[in-house]
Structures are given as C-alpha cells and as structure tokens.
Length: 130
Image (cartoon, rainbow, N blue to C red; front, side):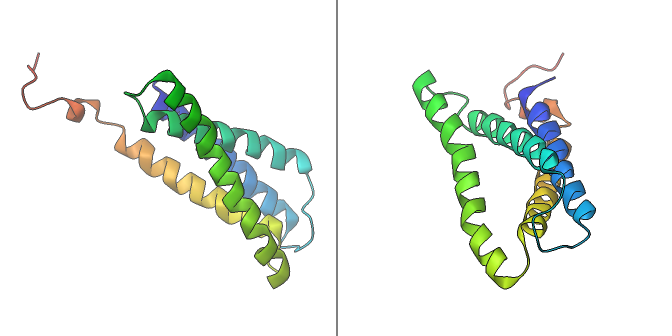
C-alpha cells in the first residue's frame, strides 16, 4: 500500500470515528460520551496529517521532512482548538464541531483516494510505455 492510500484510510477511519461520536451524542451540546472515540479519532487524524505532510515534501532533505511532519498536524490541531471557543459560546458544542471536522476529513480523504487510482498518469511525457 502506498503512503497516499494509507493517509486516506487513516483520514476515513479517524473522521468516521468522530462522526460516530457526534451521532452517539444525539446532538447534545455538552461534552459527548465515549471519550475513547475522541482519542482514537484524534490519533488517526493526527497520523493522517503527518503522512499527508510528509507527502507534500517528497524531494526534500530529511530535516525538512521532519519539520513539516510535525508542523502539519500541529497546525491542524491549533485550528481546531481555536474553533472550540466559538463553538462553545454559540451553543453548537464541541461534538458537533468534531463531527464536521470528521466529515470534512472523510470528504478530503475520499477525494484524494479517488484521485490516486490511476498511477500511470504520473509518468512524464517522455516515458516509455511497456
């Protein structure tokens, strides 16, 4: 399995976990039940962000790959943490916000999975066909 497909699977699984957690909360604006689902989804989505970040700099020195691998998921978490306060004050609640983030993750990972199906299109114009 190539790294792009792995990242897509991680995104679909992590996003699905957060969407399931939101659905189990039944729209309750308070803290959703099943905190284990939050942490499982968080680990999967962080791993997805790490793999996607490393794939963004394929032809780079190792030190740059490490910096980007840490920075990508960190930026994602900082955006989510910044959105928690408006979600709490507006009455939407954290579970709903996490459900939206999970649905977006599924959407992005699904689109990237679909775009990665034809690996022959990545060949250059001067490549020989076998």
